[in-house]
Image (cartoon, helix red, strand yellow):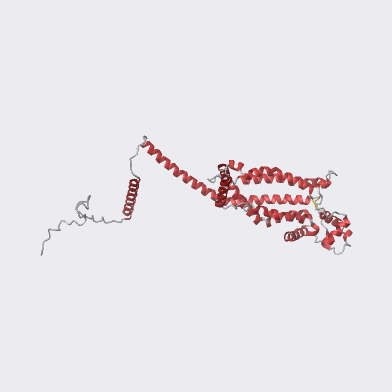
Amino acid sequence: MEFITIPFGWLLNQLYNLTGNYGVSLILFAILVQIVLLPITAKSKKSMMKMTRIQPKLNAIREKYANDQQKQQEAIAQIQKEEGVGMGCGGCLWSFVPLFILIPLYTIIREPLTNMLGADEAVRTEIAKILNLDMNNGYWQITAAQAIFADPSRFADIPGITAQTLAGINFDFLGIPLGNIPSDIIGSWTWSWPFIGTMLVPLISAGSQILQTQISRKVNNSLVTNEKGVQDKEEAEKSQSAQTGKVMMWMMPIMSLFIGFSVPAALSLYWFIGGVSRTFEDILLTKKYRKIYDAEDAEKLKKAMEQEAIEAEKERIRAEKRAANPDGITENTSKKKLQKQQQAEEAAAKAAAKKEYDAKKGIVEEEPEEKKTLSGIADRPYCKGRAYDPNRYNKTEE
């Protein structure tokens, strides 16, 4: 993962050199990382919002085909295709991409000799020997970087060591030694601020997880709408994301607390700042995409109201017919005759409308000359044959 650790390690080192404070540089680093990941986070958020919005439809399908898994899957796949939601795990894949990037970022923090101070393997090995540190311990480099800062002269004779490495890192932040692991010092309880501050960092991180989860649940529930585009609180509570949110609201803080006491305070601070940054991003992205989906919901509501008005008008007409004919007696009229009658009525209506329009425009239409039938009888034009000529035998020869 060097394509991630090298540039981000360089960035953290530059921030540390710029600020001269590891805690401040770590806060800025966490914020910048979230900004860099913003395009991926936006893609993930958009996919998640689409999935959340179709939850009512998916729940209805699951209830309808509760005993037929094949039809259920086919119907769900059709809904996802219509709504443009990724099939299978493709739609949620973007949610895991930030995680794949964040994991190497923790490596940058827990291995400062490699990623910030530029010490090669031989130099790192000599430093570990001098300090008698176990290189299999995941956080030994933090202890080493802290020891180098405290007394660089102990390591000056190491072959190949650079001035950058000899500078070490000062992990002090507001009087809190961010290199300390809370679980390692909890047995030596004191009422000093460095001890209390070290204990507070993972507690604050875990507490923020509860607040972040509650905000996320509230935002996600507001996205669930019914077929008319109106927010559906009942479906929101039944949705899969809501159920997952209830579990995560307590599971994530407990995990955060456990991990926070097992790692250096620097990692807990990074986790805390990253979580706060992600929450603000989530709110902003929701507002952005909500405008698009609100327009879609407004269109759905408009169509639903129009359809309801059409159905209400049809029902009114049916009610009038029932009132006018309570016995339900109808004429025995054929379907073709009714269609012909309807066509004649439509033609008459069009002719009347055209005549009214011509009158308003001052257009005078000449009356067509009445065509006389060969028989002379208008109602029976062919009663004497099509070639009938009354003067056929009365012609006089010249």
